[in-house]
Length: 111
Length: 112
Image (cartoon, rainbow over all chains, first blue to last red; front, side, top):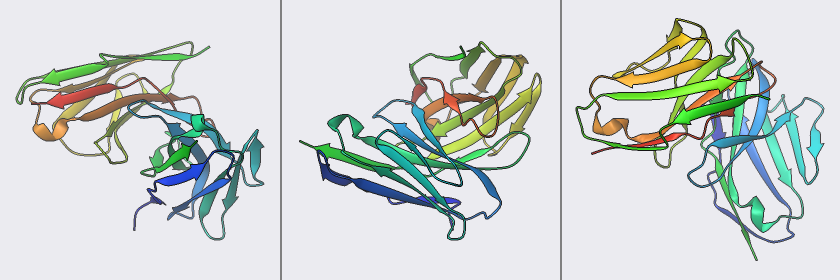
């Protein structure tokens, strides 16, 4: 089983729609969780950290379910500019903070 | 503010040639530094990480090596490139477990 798994998509959604991605992780000792956004042929950029109580940043909401070992990202009122690949990332507690990434979920927002 | 620089942006190298990619971080001291590779259509694979000058840990045995000659400089090298070394190489740094990574702009390497 992969350490971090995501549905590769693509998710094709119309502008204004709400879309949600899930990401499962295998190591129950994982401590830190993140969502990254990666545009085509660019470096990943941190979108948001995921906190135990869930957190929101504008149209983006991230949640963590430790019991089922998954994190989710909800995007409301999708914009064309949201089209990208979304990577989830998980790290164990540790001195060097190794982060394991999922392979990403591709989102295409359609006019 | 902290910035991370990575060069070159694009590189085409013949099989068997050497490689040297450089990454530098500004605006912070004693960062944890990482080299990742992303092959076409694949996920990010951690290659090396460093918690300090001269301290290198390898995650995947292969014909690549890394060095950290200065606190904010991280170098990825190879003596002889293979076709399978093609990919998007990304340097990253972090200041702590809860902050996530900041990536450099990456080097797209094609071995021909």
